[in-house]
Length: 105
Image (cartoon, rainbow, N blue to C red):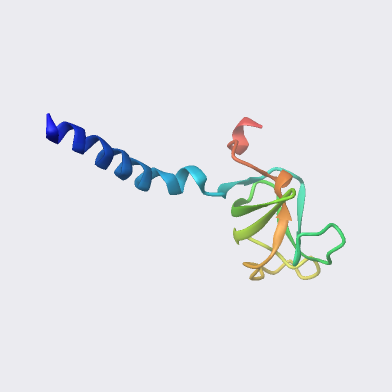
């Protein structure tokens, strides 16, 4: 009986430590649902547009609040040349990202 009482707190702590990160993580993997998703350097509607992400592109972002998401991975293109650019420190509006598979839109 002593062992059963001691195992419960240990099991509970193990459960929390294993799953807490995934429960509270703000990282989102999904797809761009708007026709064109504008990429900016700062999370502001007044920020200069530095890139675009096309509809149905797979992205991974971190929700930073206030309707913005920081790009972790995304196929960002330069608006003038169409070439891919590195935008790991850039932002998009969170409303442009969905976790619903594109075939179900």
